[in-house]
Length: 345
Ligand code: FAD
Ligand code: MG
Image (cartoon, rainbow, N blue to C red; front, side, top):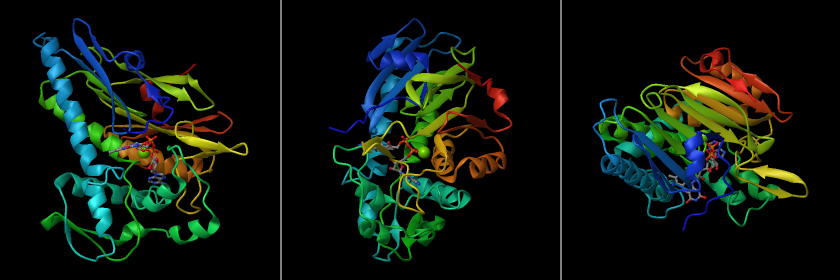
């Protein structure tokens, strides 16, 4: 049984919220189902096409294909599954050999290195040992000793990953580390599920993978989707809403996976420079864009970078907007966010 931490969705579409309490829901033109998967709650809502050709059984069948695909990809990317392809790769780090990997693992590692570079190492997929040491999100989190942290704080280890595209293989030149794809895999899986839904004839739908919202087309083939942003200071409330069409909205926050000790909150987004949970001013980092994988990597990277550097990074990228919330509850957003009618409550 997988561990699910106290989940407060970072972004919630109203139907998905209802589904936390209800497994299946069929209305005359949409089908919704939610399940525990990939270490979180996954909710999928699929609408019938405008020409009304899909009944409940067809929508349900497509929905189940999506859940199967999520499970298949989890078995590749999860560092928590000892038989996963990623765990197998982790076991070979240090052997200095060429390792053949699946298309998907190659693809996500390749995309990840792009974001390691773009965020100057704030987003870092080589933090597996550090993440396991803290154990945040489990029943046994611990504050590591400095002597335990010191050997794990080695910056830019991702640079030792060499990708050989012609052979779909990778090699790792040096290192004693483990990959952890927790900050990008949910987004990557979300993009794959969206593509599969579209391939099966879906033109309208919304997927919620924990804090990752992926919208397909427009709501009911007509309206924009309303996506709520959780207030990080009051996680049972929304701080505002966005109006979205065919985009992804991904949030990283300090209020989902954390533990308290002596009045201090230790959350799960780690600063590779210090080995400690990132405390650079941001407590909630939301990115809006076409690709959920890109948004996922950027939301984590920006959280670590802090407001000034994060705003500068997102402003420099075409097609991405951001909303950051600081520890006082102040909102800092990029210049193009008005396109999504961001409205505070
Ligand atoms: P994000 O900000 O997107 O990512 C934070 C996570 O990324 C951290 O939890 C850590 O894993 C990692 N990380 C921390 N700091 C950094 C950094 N600076 N750079 C890069 N990465 C960083 N959870 C379970 O409890 N049990 C499971 O069995 C389990 N299986 C999973 C399998 C898969 C395939 C996936 C995708 C997720 C799984 N999860 C599991 C959930 C996983 O832990 C979540 O991805 C995690 O909670 C991060 O999601 P987030 O959106 O909250 O935060
Ligand atoms: Mg992320």
